[in-house]
Amino acid sequence: MTGNAPELYIVIPAFNERDNVAPLVTKLRALLGDTSWEAIFVDDDSPDETWAAVKAIGESDPRIRCIRRVGRRGLSGACLEGILASGAQFVAVMDADLQHDETLLTAMRDKLRAGETDLVVASRYIEGKTADGFSRVRATGSATATRIAQKFLRIDLSDPMTGFFMIRRQIVEGIASQLSTQGFKILLDIVVTAGPLRIAEIPYTFRERQHGESKLDAGVALEFLGLVLAKVSNDVVSLRFIFFCIVGVIGLGVHAVALALAHYTFAASFNAAQLFATAVAIASNFFINNTLTYSDRRLSGTRLVTGLARFYLVAAVGAIANIGTANWLFGNQQVWWVAGMAGGLMGVIWNYVIASLFVWRTR
Ligand code: GDD
Ligand code: MN
Image 1: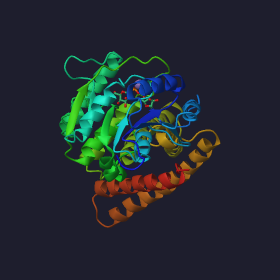
Image 2 (image 1 turned 45 degrees about the vertical axis):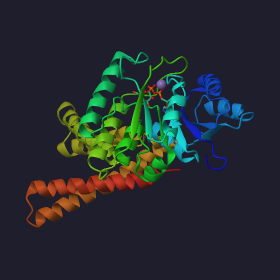
Image 3 (image 1 turned 180 degrees about the horizontal axis):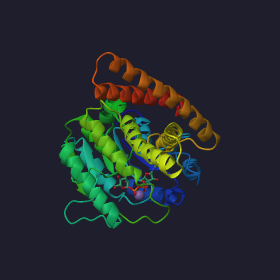
Image 4 (image 1 turned 180 degrees about the vertical axis):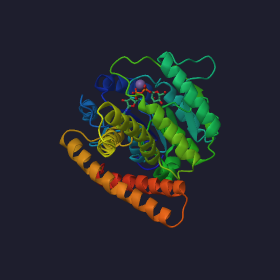
């Protein structure tokens, strides 16, 4: 142990988990007693004031701490921030909702102590162990994601999707700036980014949730695929840029439908229909980006309205960049499709960079 830092630091991401805080702390105290440990809840300013429940306990027990993040959302980012707040030798990441079997923590710590392991993963799929707390749809989705990760990222973990693991903190410190703060899959990201690690797996049963509800929604599947693409391309393309492009492609579809509607159904002139379709597609791109691409910086209230206005402005200039590039290339003897694609690429990159800076700014 170094100085006063605890040996084990448990990072517990939490969003609207108020009723789970006290029971979890009770279980941790019973399990870890007066060994050297600390727990930190990373709460994204939960409306149910989970952070208040944690801080109330922390008043009489300094081992129970809380990072209350405002203006931000996201599981991976919360976990990373918790890990980096620590000075401990070993850090664990564990859900706040009691679905993870906390009694594994001591066995995980002992494996790291023994010195031959860098990372201990609590897995839901080894030897007869099941994922009881899981719906059918979720189980199928999780199994598919696991196969994709195993094949494309050459991961040979039986449960790379788990959110329960313990690792030597120094490993994460070394790669922190390369990790994605978006999405749910921080373990997968760590394993792929860190390169060869000595990994042990321990089986456990995923419990049913007692209080509150899951925050995983359909966007999680997309976030996962984005992470795989980013990692396969060696981070040349960021997760956010991939989302931005996916949304762009969806926008083309929206544009086509709006154009056809205006032109045929309402007999608008082609120019008027084109203008209308462009306006609709930009708005639709804005709202999908706000939900998906920038879920961690989501705008709401009046900021949503000003954001939309800014996005229109950005897109208008982007269109000029697009058409300008295409015309210039076409004028310089490029074939039409190369000129068109280059123009489109210019437009996308412009929109992406400028929107990140001026529409979804970090606060
Ligand atoms: N700070 C913060 N910010 N915490 C969050 C956020 C967020 O945006 N979203 C979720 N959490 C917290 C929850 O409060 C919970 O403690 C934990 O992260 C897991 O979230 P759940 O919503 O309970 O996820 P789940 O039970 O559906 O999914 C679990 O199993 C998956 C395996 O398929 C998690 O362990 C996932 O990490 C895991 O991938
Ligand atoms: Mn859960």
